[in-house]
Amino acid sequence: MKEAIPHKRDTHTEPAMNHATRPDRTTPLDHPKVTALIFHPRPTPDAKGQEKIEVAEGVSVGARFHLGEPQWPVILFFHGNGETVADYDDVAPHFLAQDCSFIVVDYRGYGTSGGAPSASAMLADCEPIFAHVEKRLAQQEITGPLFVMGRSLGSACAIELALRHQGEKIRGLIIDSGFGATLPLLTRLGVDCAALGITEEASFGNLEKIAQVTIPTLILHGARDEIIPVGEAEELQAASGARNKQFFVVPGADHNTLMLTAGAHYFQGIRQFIDKILGRTPRWRRKPR
Image: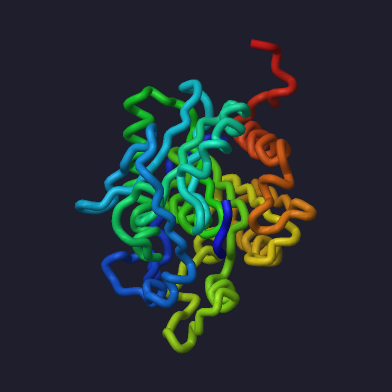
């Protein structure tokens, strides 16, 4: 899975209690053989404009806030397993061009972050990251609605937060090249799940969790994705508990070329999804400001 580069009351929902969401418990997904295959941390020099989010005592992860107008929708983004915050410096302007603020965060051991990556830490860190983002936006009087988005491995983080904070706090879920069941993915990566005692019930649980997510959901996937086949995206779409759910397959795109192949349509499609949720007039129908 290594990559290149109507408004209602908040319904905070506790996720299914599997091992991967319990950082206080040992999980088979944290076995070194698994960690070495699903995480590809790439440290980068400290970069201007990045800030640190404390996720545990003595451990912080890097983040970059690309913020536009206070009323613009805000997208909190979790990247793929071979990427870093800095890789999205050239992507952020495309979101800003669609009147969307864009926040991207790293995992432990990635970019300027401390610690070492693990499945349990990745999911446990979602909550302090979300709390920091909420506080930061409030401090800067950013009032736009919040959306959560995850690419590839990051889909697990996005689904986790959508389940926990769907409704008033998180208005929509966006998944780019996400996976459904965990074991088929691990098997394709070369993990002997049976030998390590890994079961679907004690894994990321994306399918089980997304079934409980009822906020509007957009799923984007490449038709030629060789790492996470498009059938897995179809499983996520079928399992989704959202009434308002959209599913787009990009012809000719593989796991690492979805955004590039779709081009401007990628960002415009996300903005149209957000506009529909918020009941806003599409940008092309607005009068010049």
